[in-house]
Image (tube, rainbow, N blue to C red; front, side):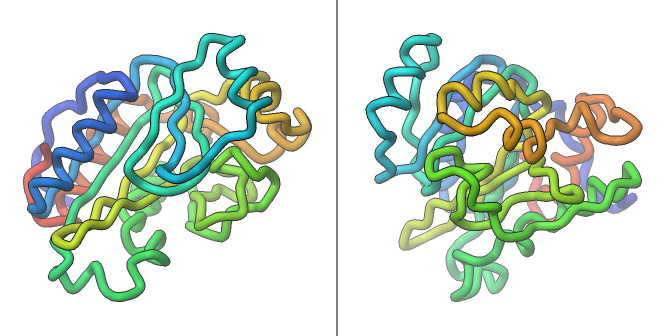
Length: 226
């Protein structure tokens, strides 16, 4: 880890709803900021303006999954206890936002790629695989975080006139059976393309990953983590 990176408090455990609320509060404040949270419940979040098919909604209800609407875009994501949620906010006047911010996954997600490299893992942001209309990490919208051809993260944005929120999810574990069932995806596709950070080579500890990620994001943004 960079010796110049700010010291970071341990990311706190929070529900998916609390995580979304904290991100929107950070966006409303409009100041350069970064944060990492550890999800402690099961929920599905879906991007604003995205409508899930009735069959998906029915299967979510049948297995007791609440559905929350994000202020950002994108399709649905299943959140599991232990998943890491990361966020950065920059004023729209910041040169790093730029006019191409809707295609800025690699720029905003560079600290995550560098974090993977700390553990000897090569990651990259690349076009989403286009294997599902409704599950964000396998959809054809935006970009996802890949290790080889395995999706280990995704991101979305919410822009206002003053500031930009770019936030992402790093699944610690993947409930492949639930993803396949709820979103109607071939189980072999889910098994072959979705991965959790607990499965990475060397099996880095979640506490280590979350603390180093918070520090890297804060160093990139140039602000103390919230």
